[in-house]
Length: 195
Image (tube, rainbow, N blue to C red; front, side):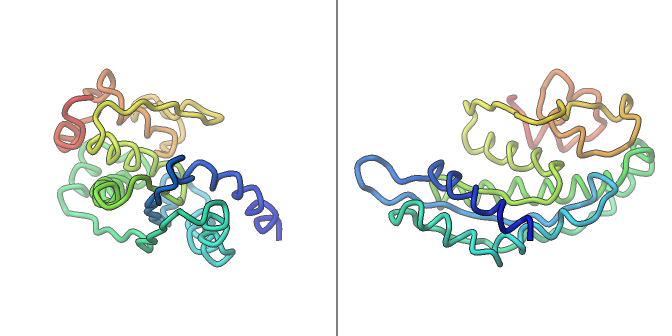
């Protein structure tokens, strides 16, 4: 299958997680986030399990035997009634807003746990709506983090400028302080107080 060939390119990814030059071991935490509700196509939620079944862990391990890998499994989340109310009141035109927030709030917490126990982490999606939770969790752990967002699109759409209502085109707008006031979500200030 085509994705097995793509996995071969993951070997170079392993170098990103290589152990320190001193020969010390480096701890890497992996979390799968089978989230597909940021857009309308199904299938991306299968990626975490497909990559695991294709020996992702072994490929990473083979890139550096000093790498200690902990797989935290797949993220689970529950949608609170308050998020559903926000979706009905403010974001009825955004596809699966409540699921997006619930998933990313859970991911933020999980990333912090992983970074307390590991030097590095790898989030396997799902669609790129989960970029918000991955980066926000890292920023809470490492406030002076620098980020270079590379994508075919800016992913900085706002709820009131998105023509499709697909929230996978919006994660950067949640991360930028200058745009956060366009979102009526009180938890954003708690999640990202200093950015």
